[in-house]
Length: 499
Ligand code: ACO
Image (cartoon, rainbow, N blue to C red; front, side, top):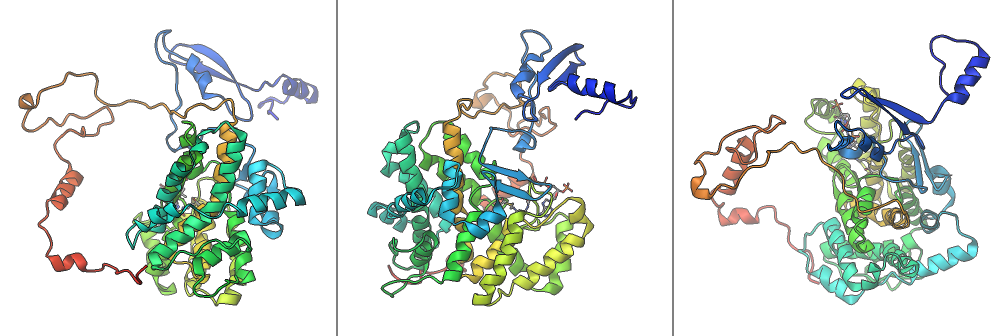
């Protein structure tokens, strides 16, 4: 409700003013003196409405500049809601805490994709549809065998998901509901298979085929860890813990990788190609690669006694405290709280991860430190997830892959919403051009030996200018003398077992 201003004229006038309040924004362009009234809907103005604000009728309209989408909504969505100040996360309206306690990953995936919790019959059909799509074409196996023995599993996943598009050309029919349904089943079903194959490739183990008698996470554990036994029986505690972790990671509204999924998908490419791009975005250490980075950081710190030194480096801007901070949460990440609880259940079975003490103490000190408090930096979902994954026996390289499997449900739900949204078009942001004005091509023999160092309008030296120190450093590195042959083998791992 609007405040009537400093002069309070009594309740009647207040009511009148309130009823007169309009959902518009009045803007005066001080360059021209003209005033514009722009509608506000759902707490936002349409950036397109700014186009009418222009200096002269032939000039370009006003644009908004928002690198990294700090305050720009790119879509209207009905899937996931986050209140970052209150630490709230809802999937289709259901609190994450309730889903983590009472749902299963496959049921949550249905909820995200279809919008409602399934009936018992629908859930059984959905589970059957996913389960019967877990196997991959034998050529996919051959494709994966082509990777180097030490390929990062996330790189393998990115490439192999993209390669799936060549196996399913019907996926191009993105406006055909039947095709969309089939690709949805295939993607949710095949991601664990690809992930497990990627792991076994690096481990030098034969790929284990899906076991459709097991649950979604039970089957994944089987494909990961099955050795010579005829039937792998997953530990129910670990199976359920993984299922809860998958629920927590299933969607998170318009994050970096989801935005990539929507943006790539807006060109109307098939969902496998779009999902490969989303996986690539997730791989980065500031996003889904953070869980891997947290473990490496905890190992680097090494002991509780060395935490203050590390935090001093963080505060000096030398390194980031991985697993801390979030673009949206300025309070505890609700998923982090659930994971911390889950850790106790897993450790009761597996024994405590020795890195836990460092993590707990790091969190305690950081949450009392003004640097983190003033910037509202709290532990995010990745701070504790890696510690559990490691206790469960997953190698560190697999952590971002473990994020990508459940996030596939969210990516598809968001992609389907985008495909069905009449307002969406091909994503194409504007830019603010600060480069050179038009100039004519100069033949190489007429160019000066040392190009001039004219600066562009940002004050930066032109990229065509004389090398600055980073380019010089790169040049020196690229032209360094070749190392002796023996050095090329230092630190190189050998394949553990023949396949
Ligand atoms: N460690 C130290 N300082 C940090 C951290 C951190 N982890 N995160 C943010 N800050 C500081 C920044 O230096 C900046 O300080 P300044 O105002 O003095 O310059 C301030 O907090 C704001 O940081 P931004 O980078 O502007 O925040 P942004 O919203 O762009 O970044 C991000 C969010 C990328 C998650 C960031 O907090 C970060 O890098 N965290 C570590 C990586 C991580 O854990 N990522 C996982 C996120 S959850 C997920 O994707 C699943």
